[in-house]
Length: 393
Image (cartoon, rainbow, N blue to C red; front, side, top):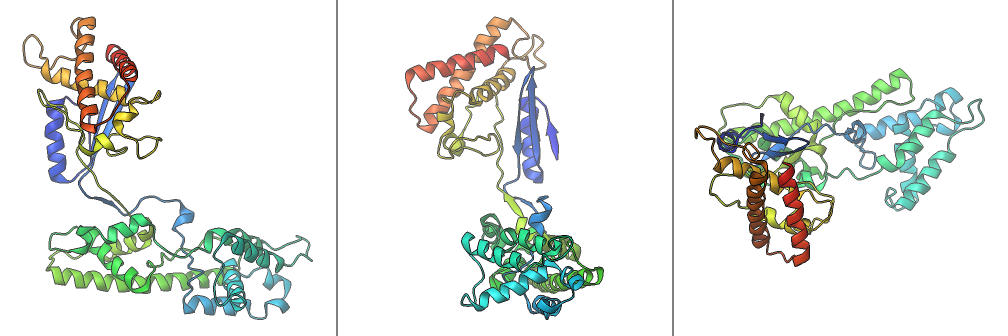
């Protein structure tokens, strides 16, 4: 990773090296109390460990249980109505949910609760099964089961971002020089195509249960995770042989990928603007879209960057002033001609006018490239704002 607060000509060289080496480049530019930063990422920047919230990494697979999980639940809930109070109050809540889901399916054509209304009814069903004729007036394990209904009874489907990775060109065609990420992604994609689920991560949340029962439940999930991992590893080895790869991907990397499979992410990066002397800035698709490596906005995704100029709280005018600052530095040299001269190093008022003029030209080019239509009065206000930023910088 490269963090670069540098002049445009050096930034252009760093950007070229970062693009060739496929490493991130952070460009930070600060003038007084104003600053901006841009991120240059490789064309394909995959991330395995995205640091999701701990709760979101637990895939209990309650609506798609495998035989061993069902067997565990049946063993722990056998004769549940006649259990001793202490035994009843220590049934792991996962076993309770699997048990009551099986009961629910008997009266709902074999289907699990799907809608919010059905899940609410199922939650009431579980809540009523708790015993209240005890000093506590309830049971903690049943409270845990009730609390987990809405977040745990969802089909184990990957989100759209994960599915997009499986269909990415780099994932579909594995070559000898393909990055390990794409080889493993292809293997997990095969797993998903076969079973319509991702590999089980294998983690289990804390819960009210006897230690022996909790350890047994952990082993049920860990065993399933190991079996899923073994199948993915087998697919990876096949892909390696088929592509004639000489470097073998370590199993620990495949395991880490499987555990994070539901949260992997692919960012399509692109170079940011590097202002060069006498070169017109090319906005490209940035002129007609929000986002990318340079901007983050709360406004509608359909609004163009050019139209954002008209928003009262828009920071586009400030960014344009920064681009003008870089162009000023790229086109103005010191008296000795050995280094760039920053705006304001000479006469402040004269430099401010020059900086504003450069910023106005950048703005005109942006509006023209975007094909945007802006009211004359609004455009005058925009240029006034840009002029103020140029003067302050």
